Image (cartoon, rainbow, N blue to C red; front, side, top):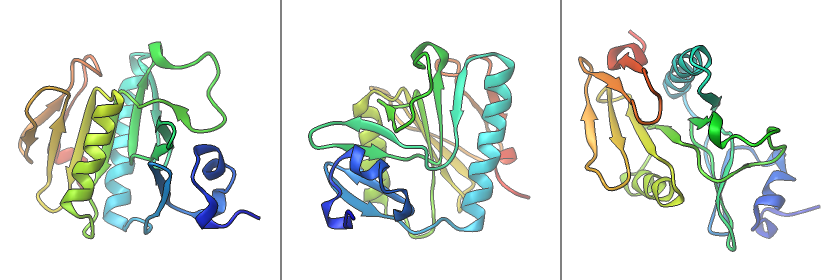
Length: 182
């Protein structure tokens, strides 16, 4: 039986699903607490909105919470966003059994009350360095979405704004207020 201390590769992590929520960061296992209700509702709402748009326009696939993406090797890094999108052009002929090889086109991170700013920014940096085209960081407390992209300034959209993303999700738009429960 593999112990937590022995897990340092993406393959070892995938072979041990009973560990619960965790990520692998440069060969080190990081255990994470389960998310709260508000976090889960926002992630599910965004996944539903994205799925509807992606399916309607045949753009690719939306990944639900905790789908793993291996974004670095030797040492391995496996990140698991709350919601992700991979374009049809980047999807392999058959869906991988294990972690997706490489980054999603879009990674969505929903903040939890115990998230530290440095850890969230490290995730954003990891996603962008791995080749992710956009990262959305959703903040339930301020009811806002921060949009990150490579080589551009971060922009923050608030409750009354509309989130669009013509680069990654052609035709997509949603009012920020619709992401959050009333």
